[in-house]
Structures are given as structure tokens and as C-alpha cells.
Amino acid sequence: MGLFTLLEGFLLLANALAILNEDRFLAPRGLSFNEVSGGARAKSLKGQLVGLIYATQYLRVPLIALNAIVIVVKLVSG
Image 1 (cartoon, rainbow, N blue to C red):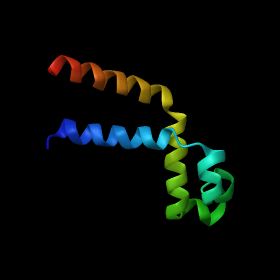
Image 2: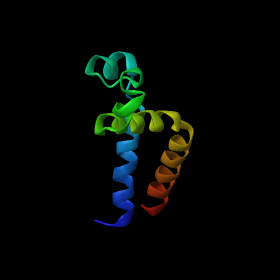
Image 3: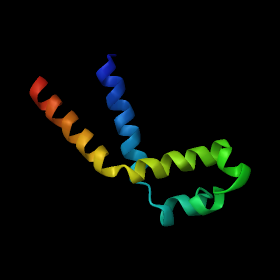
Image 4: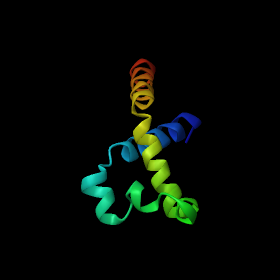
């Protein structure tokens, strides 16, 4: 397992987090941004996880560019 394979795995994880819908998936499970924002809850593990999910959703355009780069590299390398 090389470094590129590990980076591909992290990219797949970021893709998975970016497509999660707040209304249909996150809110029923108590992972809404409104529920964990503010105070001590934001510093908990659950609050940090919700922050990570929202950060990946916010950075969708760079994520699309990274996906395109990885696809081109995979096509060129064989």
C-alpha cells in the first residue's frame, strides 16, 4: 500500500462526508449543526465530527477538483 493509495482512501472518505444530507440523515441522528453549536458541546467529539462534516460540505468545489486530478492520474498511469 503506497502513499497514493492512502490519499485516495482519504479522498473517498471526504467524498462520503460531503454528500451527507442534513435534513434526511444528520438531523434525525442528532448530528445537526444547530444541536451541537455553542458552548462545551462544540468541543466534544460529537461537535468536532459535525464540524468536520460541515467543513467537507463547505469545500465541495476543491473536492471536485481533487477528484478530477485523481481520475486523470489514474487514467494516465494505466
